[in-house]
Image (cartoon, rainbow, N blue to C red; front, side):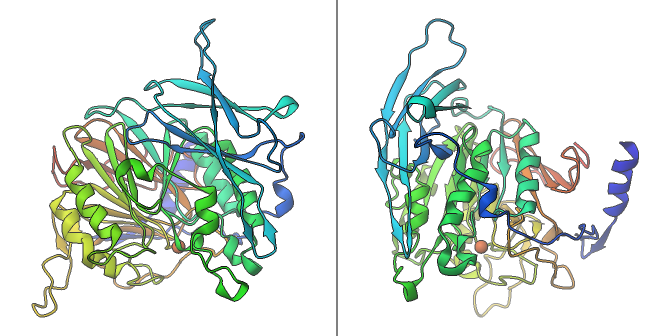
Length: 463
Ligand SMILES: [Fe+2]
């Protein structure tokens, strides 16, 4: 084991350029082949529920949206039964009906998509739930978060651009092998159905089945990526995000939003704001107006950690999707700095990168101050579109490494954000080809509101 870890460390010998690190890690060659449709058949049983997944169902974590799909819309197939686990003989089973829809897309007809929002759950409590009828009942469980509060430890997993390749499988099961992760933050690009002819919607189904062993047991907070748009006018599909919004819903109304594409939740010690790179965000647009109001509602005394998710990164020194996030950065970066956002998560680029705390808000078109500068009030930007999808790895960097880039690497993997209290959070990024115990990149993050100290990267090389 020691030899294995040592060899990984040697592989990870890195080069300092302008203070940042471009990892020399060489990922083992492996094509980004998708797992076939046949890899994920429907579960056995008449009208068995499938593609079960969870997301937060209210503002503060006492609600859960349970989603599942059935081939037919039979009596009872839209009902979830749930109860507190380990309550001895005092088991009160509750039932909740789902809202149900289906959709057609070109030559595809979906199953029946059920979403049931259960509310007023106890905090920090394990629940069992069942969906399905008769012999096709399937049982799952989840644990609610602790009550929102400043010193509540809580661990988020971070996975983006996952897809459904063999590499995606490695990433997901590596994440699941570690019991620390309690909720996933997912900054977009799920199934990659649109990489197939006519946006083969069966890939949404196989993705749902692929994710179920994780997604049925812990909530995933999603931001929408470009692969969720499914806008294909030449085959008559003219409504962006239609399949995605049928399949993945959220409690956007509880944060005053008019769209599931931008919203917020509070969970344990964190206030999480989700934005849409692919919706209007210019001045006067609904997203702009909502975000302006939302940032005023953040109460760092209650939720010290302020995290934003967006799909297209604002700081990205990989030679892919260059500047695609720039116009949104121009619109909102000063708000983030003024609000002392701790962390911004993005996907889209299929590599991993962590920024320094920098801002570029002094720049206007005439003053020439166009280089990002260190700014203790600025977020750390994480690009983590490295789940392992069909499009493969992004392996070309801008050279030299810009000073805002603290660490970058062409690998697939996931991250963990272990919030310890209102001042400290241990952040680690894990390559999916390493033992989960190895953190290829890590930093003890300090809260911008309570403890705005400068971080030292790699405080914890192996955690
Ligand atoms: Fe993307």
